[in-house]
Length: 350
Image (tube, rainbow, N blue to C red):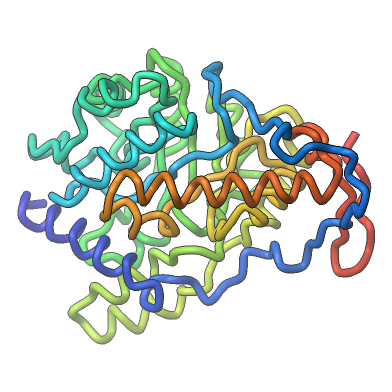
């Protein structure tokens, strides 16, 4: 694909995702059906609640990941710098958008060692699409990691987006083998995520057997990339086909519970429509180790580092208040907090 078309696509993606009415899914995350049991006597000091955790052996002050947004547009340079500076200040993790454009065109758009320089303590995750891993996938993956001195590589799965995208990758044969080859050869761990349609328990098992170390379920309920591609389509028929899938996918809460039940010890990230710290807390209670946000912070990321910091400080404070109001002194306690599903008390995790 010509450089100009790749870059235009990424700019289109940013424009559409920034307009929530155009990109947000009709699907629900599933979190609305869950409610914590309120504890009117927490016997805790709010400011002493401990949200610390780790990701791939690196310490974090809160279980938050700035999820992959988009890569390749000129604006992404500013976005990435604001995000990494905020992540460094807050002690949270950052996953960059797809590095395909940077690797294919040489236009890095901020995806350089400058990110590591500004975020020396940030768990930093590189990013490539699964369809790019066949053929020279190992070399490409290593270049993506080296480009930003990343701690891990995210491989994103987006078959629906590719299916409805003009010129998208239609051939997905051999993708699992390509992922297995990369996990075996790469110098850092591999994380696999969807982009908003969810990862099922059966697919998660296949990925773990292929050597993947972390799964981001990235379920339905947030940005719909089918809707994004429908909005981009100059062809009315293409738009009609894509928009029919705007509510497609496994709701985030369902994907999370199923994957956790199938793989009790697997590190899991929950993303896909996480709107605030209450959703984040629900995700942790349902089995997530980390929670990711992308579209919700994009407007702040375009503005300034301070705006991103303010956004995530609100999320962190909301998460702390949920802990406080459930009598949970830390994340381990929150993962066992009493919770109702459609009015019925859930079993407490072992």
